[in-house]
Image (cartoon, rainbow, N blue to C red; front, side, top):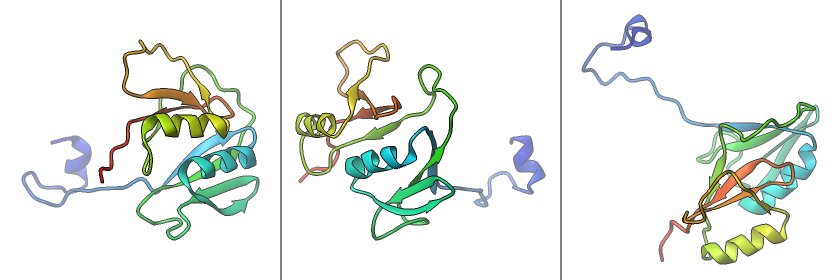
Length: 142
């Protein structure tokens, strides 16, 4: 058993596991308003609030604490350096991957090259500030 679990009083073989869920993603941004608008279009989210230059978006009916995490675009002047170690994967909910790719390109996504072979079943794109994300195939079936 890991030391941190023993120190927290977790007994081996018991069901008193600690768990968390992702409640929000915070993304540094040179232009929080622009990225918020882009990602609202991508995800069908709405702006939930603005505080000190940051813009929070999320599902209209849920907001913070809902089933899906909210996204906060926080102002930052730090330059993006290389490929990010974390990225968002999205999948279409009401159309096929090709139609969704066309839609995302039309609202400002750009194709991104992170060393893929061309054999992948997903598309690597970048948002207006160059943050990579992947468009997967549709996962929901009718």
